[in-house]
Amino acid sequence: MTIVPTNNNNHEHLTSEEKTKISKLRELVQDDLTEFYDTDFNLLRWLQGHSGTIEDVAKKLRFHLKMRRSCWKLDEMSKQKRDHPIHNHWKHGITGDSGVLDSVIVNIEQCGQTDYWGMIQTYSIQEVMKARVPDLEEMLRKCMELEKQTGKQASILYVMDLTGLQYNKRLYTLITGALRSLSEFMAEHYVELIRYFVLVNVPSFVYAIWTVTKPILPERTRQKVRILSSSNWQDEILEYATKESLPTKWNDEIDHGFLAPIDLPINYPEEHYYSNKKDELKDLEKFRIVAGKNLIICKEVKKGEKLRWWLTADADYGMGVFHSKNKDENNIHK
Image (tube, rainbow, N blue to C red; front, side, top):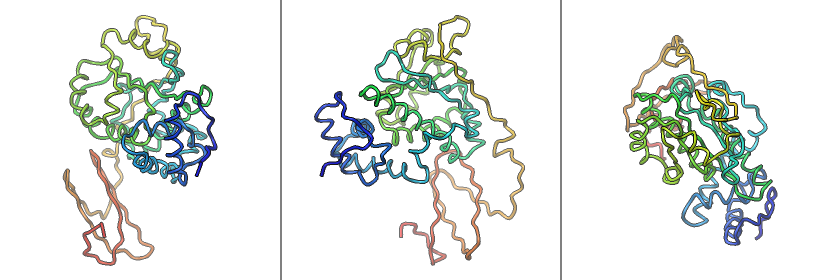
């Protein structure tokens, strides 16, 4: 059976082998593939980013496609405004085309000045994802638009500006916890969207952190990282993008001619941290779960009753709600 893409043109830059594999992959995932996402280059990214058989790639792609069709409604995010409260602090970073690298769009991530710690102390990971996923979808949409214009595969130059980055316990907690989870999410759902991760204005301690974090990053992510020198990065970055797409904030004492305006991040007020909230929580049962352990809590509830919980954690955790007719049940896999 031949599946014809509904939102895609033939591209002369694809090899015959790539076209054959794309056609096979499209056929395997057609039941979950949406009109918006159905382009040759979107499917090609998954083939480039995963080894194994096309059937194996299809299983991973199908997981992403189901998310696109879920309550997240990823295809519709490109039509929405960037107006989540977190966006007041985590600023927009797309500045334009690279102008140096072919079919590459520049995104500036102000890592050193963005208050990630305040973010996870103020908002749940669900809210963080509600703010972050639209930005990832915008990067995808920008690439798709460029691909439609040029007939060439597009990608993102992800510039990580470490200006103002401080070395402390919070930083280690972030890069092994919340930020690591975001990195893994990007690698899992936005396969081969990033051309390079380029680190600029790098403090000396970053090399020690890189040694620690390198093993926990996905392999293909590690291969894309470029760390520019601490002394000459404002010249070295011109090997990746023109001055028109690089932020004016880098002009500092010397006018380097960078022309792209970007808004500076804003810190979160500490009084809004969960730990500083004065809300009185009554009639709670308290439980503590140590790292690597799990806990099963059984509650007998009647129709119309509600379960409520208040959770705090400083690392990855998972939870679920299960129904059983046996109040002593402790096997969630039944």
